[in-house]
Length: 474
Image (cartoon, rainbow, N blue to C red; front, side):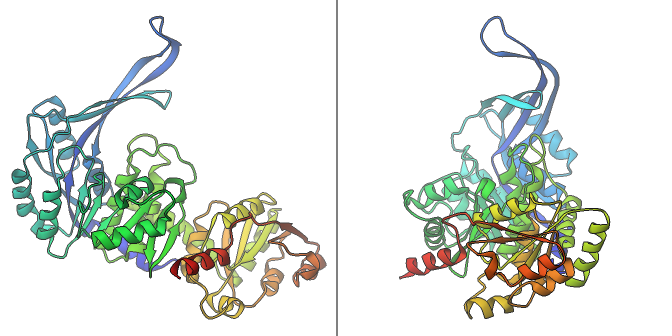
């Protein structure tokens, strides 16, 4: 199996980990109902309430995600002396979480969402963001940090996390991974943590660079100045991180985005568990990306589980086939009267042009089989400096795309031998080819297949991207 078994072993290690979460705890309240009329008092909808529910929010949602993924969790946070605080404590107890909540004179942070017909209509926030006393927080951190495997700083800029607390956590961590979700943009606020996970907007704000700067420049500046690794979340674009001084993208895998509430908390939970379980940052980002892809397909503040996560990887892994397997699959599909579409390429540094090509290709049939050049064949075609992304990673990213049904490697300079085995109804070629220049054209037409050319999206090519990177270095 081409999907690295190592990643599955990493995920299965999650229940053995103990994670310390320090951050702004909130209570998410949902008031749900049916909208059938407009208020006579003002032009606003009237919600006929049929349900009220509570879930942990903010740092509490990080805790819920960690527990859902099987980890043991200790939480350090702050609440008020109110009814909402007691609800938070009950929710934590129900999840089996050790909480060390500091009671303050500030009210518990509550975010109330009004929902009608599964559509969020309004959010009402109760919060006081004044900073708390550092000494109480640091005292508890000193007690609890010894027995944990990793630390999450869940910062929502609501008063708990300060520069001095971050500095103390880093000092007390003694080499343990510290992952911070940043919401403060002061210089050096998160210096010397292990990893920060800003979104794209936050990354630019933290770097103090203008919009004319590239994301790579932003990431490089942050890593240099903060002495930490940076994983930038990019909503529908997935995630980006630096590897060997180059920015690599991990495309989003969500099939349908239902609700992005709490997705960042899912990312940081899966990330810290993966790192503490032996994954590299890139591997951890892939696991976190899949976790987020699951939760955004669910309404409200949701979590994912080890079972769900493993099932996604197993499904993707099953998409990657050997040439012998793909031959058997093709015969079975034809017996089912399925229309098979085939395309091929290197797909080194996956970009939007590739994705658009594959989406268009899938529309020409029922099943899309993608022939992928091996690393060795790319070296012969493109030179010794290619590929940039190794074949296993390329296959896994392509398998994550909904439009791709199967991925199969070929080692030759062209896919003729693979086409003979698959015998697709349609062979798609991307680019500015003329059909007379295609060696596979005769093979496809001899068994009654069709060759279709799809122009590539202008302005996107792997070579152009690589040349741009080279020019930036000069």
